[in-house]
Image 1 (tube, rainbow over the protein chains, first blue to last red):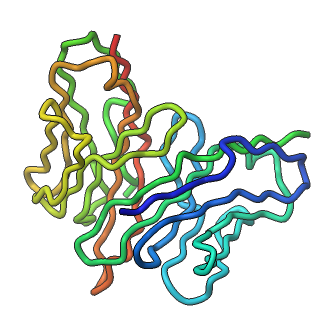
Image 2: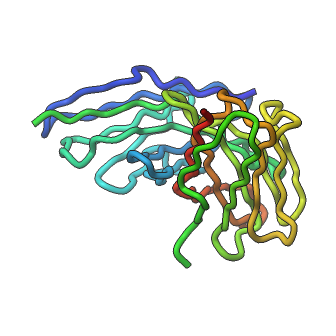
Length: 115
Length: 117
């Protein structure tokens, strides 16, 4: 069975500061990894994904994440926070086999950006 | 194509009533998923379809829940005899099946928020 742990349900940073949102997973084989952003009353929007190849992946809005197999982590970072980054961020994993479709999600981290 | 759509966006019902939600996936996406999200939690998988076949159902999906995708296009999720614990956001997602890999980017709809009084 897979699981996803997001450390810190709430993270608060000042505008211009580094954003670091943590995600660790448990899986029998390295899965596909995703970060989504969710605004109030909206569905999930994909920020970035890791499937294969380069372990540092870049996404939309200046976010990036690094897959570290030895640490089973996929932390999300952004060098400089903007007010518009305030949202819920959800990490997810999906199994790597042909018949698997579902994703397993973390509980999300709410990012607050202070002026 | 404007993405995954869900209808209604909000539903308020009384305990014991039946409700039905609809999801229209992105055209030609053969996979369709239903998730449930409660406050403070991430989405939890309920069920998924490949074309019209329902391939997997979570144990979360009690016998009061039923999902269909009769023609492999839109899907409906019905909850019978609703309970207050059913109050949640119900999310639908669709994805293509690309080549020989199961790489699986899911595109999510805006969700249907259900409130059971």
